[in-house]
Structure formats: C-alpha cells, structure tokens
Length: 398
Image 1 (spheres, helix red, strand yellow):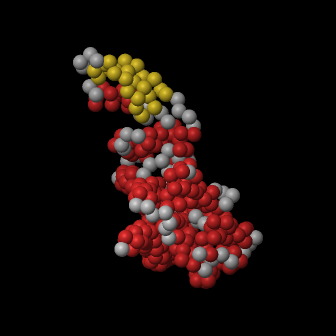
Image 2 (tube, one colour):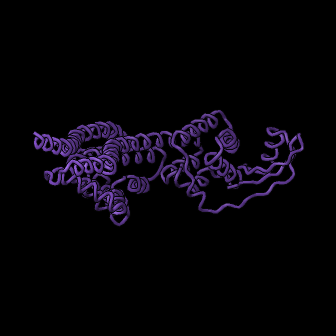
Image 3 (cartoon, helix red, strand yellow):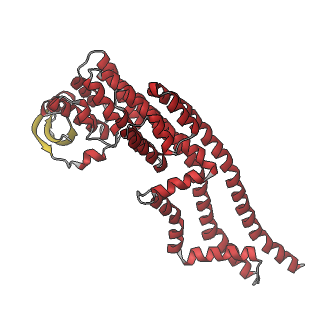
C-alpha cells in the first residue's frame, strides 16, 4: 500500500510531519500545498507488508456506495483510473482510502481492474472478481460493476438475516449470565450471612443449591470464568475446519433451525450462480464458486458432486439429483429448466431469500417460548430460594 511520510513547513514557519496514503508523489505534494497551505520539505515512501493487503476490510455500506459511484462515473464516460482516483480522494481516511488508492495505483500500472481486486480477498470475493474480469474482457466494465454491486447487496442481506437469527438467543444467554453472576457475587452471599446471623443453620434443598453455587463462584473464580467461556470455546471449535462438517450436519438435524439453514445456504448458492452466469462465467466455474459461498459443508459437498457429475458428461439436473443433498423442488426446477439455468436460479434465489426471512422468523418464534420457560424457571427458583428461608424463620418465631 503506497503510504508516505511527508515533512512540510506551514505559513507560520512551523515544521510538521504527516503519514498519509496517496496514489503517487505528485498527488501528495499537491494535496499538502493546496489543502494545508504548506511547502513540502521531504517525502518518503513507507514499505508495507504484503499480508496487510489481504487483511484489509471495509464496511459493506461503504463498499456499496463506492461501487454505485464507480458505476455512475463509468457510465458517464470517465476513465477507470480517474474514477478510482476520485473515489480514493473522497473516501474517509483509513482502510477505505488505502483500498481504493492501491487499486487505482495498480490499474495505472497494468491496466487491469479485475486483477487489482484479487489483492483484497476480504473485500472482493472470487465470485466478485470473476464477474469484473468477465465484463472487463467483454468491454462492459460498468455493467460488471453493477452486477458486483447487486451481488454484494444480496449477500449482505443474507448475512443480516443470519445474524438476526443468532442475535436474540445470544443476547438472552449473555443477559442471563450477567444476572446470574451479580446474584452469586453480591446478593446471595449477603443473604446467606443474614441467615447465619439470625441462627438459621439448616435450609431447604433449593436454597442450599443456590448458596452452594454462590460459594463456588466466590471460592473458584478461575473455574467460573472457564465455565462461562466454555460455550464460546465450543462454538469456536465447531467453526474450525476440522469440526465444521460435524457442526453443519448437526444443524441440519435440528428441526427448529434446519429450514432456516437450508434457505440461507440455497439463497447464497442461487444468487451466486445467477450473478456469475449472467456475467458469462462457465457453468463449472460458477458451480465451484457456489460451493465456496454455500455456508454449509453439506451443500458445498453437494455442489462439488454436481461439478463432478457435469465433468463426467452428465447434465446439471442429473448432478443435482445424484448429489442427494437438495430439496426435491430444487432438483425438479433445475432438471426442467436446463435450457435456461440463469433464469431458473434467479427465480430460486428470490424464493429462497423470502423463505429465509420467513423460516428465521418461524425459528425465532419457536425458540422464544422455550427460552422464556427456562428464564421463568430460573427466576422462580431464585425467588423460592430467597422466600422459603424467610418463611421458615417467621414460622420459628411464631
């Protein structure tokens, strides 16, 4: 990433040093002299590690806004390098400006916009790069940028639906842990001390359990922290490549979430295939890209089996049928629409996008009562653990 350290002298005679991103020395000198009203003394280019490009990420709304602007400028006849320079100039300081600055510099060096995007895999996936390269080769770069923008917007919506399905249970779980910690650390110890001071030596089993839990938290804080972090550790392990297939198969066996997982995976697959096929990407390459973005190992392997079947001179519909991983209606739609697969996958994409929203709402509607029952049981247990000893003390006094 071209980053420079510039020393300059302001009109007041004060020397200053600034580290800033710029496309080249000329543009940096112009910015300092015009915006800062200063005279450049020295400029040094700072070397950056190659891995920094691969780690670059920018928010999805910022990416979509930049792609919108880029498409409008290309349609208006602005050259790609000048359009990228303009986006880099008005991008906010930080990762976004470094991203577009580096892309503009690489385009001016080799003239290939699609290849310059490969240096940022966390921003531009292989599917997005493939669309740009295909349209760039055909001389329809503005159309390719529009396809990438639409594809990125669809994938962002799917990610939002996925997060919406996880956010509510996770929030309830975290709030439950916090309230339990407050109860065990502050409330129950004081209540236990009060009972001992009043001469109560024996308590009921429910109260004794909560007092034991409070004593364990206070006497073994490291074990308590480990127990609290255990769910996060289990989730992290399940997301590792070695355990991910088992986790994905398990998710498809849970009745409550199976429909939502299936709809989300199929929406990703259908949207990706439609976007790539409309960009002129070959069937095999489009299916391989679908396997990457599926989000579930079961469907990824199913798509790879389809690829293997197509390479053995089978049709796409036959490959979907042999994979034995897709719903019957998907197999029927693909087999009956072999002559117009982009349109078939486009309609399936719209269907599964709406189904994903509906199934996630249905799953949340089924999970909420279950979580409410657990919360009520816990609250009722705590209330009884506090009230019963008080009633026992009152009865003894009488």
